[in-house]
Image (cartoon, rainbow, N blue to C red):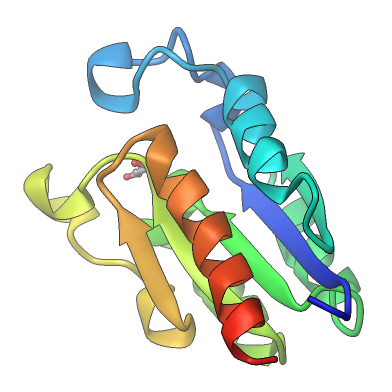
Length: 150
Ligand code: DQA
């Protein structure tokens, strides 16, 4: 890619506990391991990958505002906020860049309250159900699409 592709990965509540949090659902890898896998995918590519995790809905909304005109892509695992947050949906809707929703688990195979996503209708696409690989697939997808657009 000739121009740098700026990606912001946002992780929501409780994802800082990956590794010990319900590993039978979310896997044994820690958040830092998943970030390292994604950074490795970006090595040698003209990509800047910023990574954040917060347990605060307000911080996510502010991060999305601050990403305007800075990030080309937001990749977001909104965790539990996925299923309930109108403010998060509104923030993603106003972000002019592209957006991918990510989940480690297949939310559609789980409890009914997880089947609905407040944000799916305002993102470009979703990758879910592949554990840590959901993140890697999303990052690879962004890189492939940037290459194709050249
Ligand atoms: C999750 C799925 C959500 O339902 C849950 O609240 C999470 C993680 C996932 O990555 O599978 O915290 O977003």
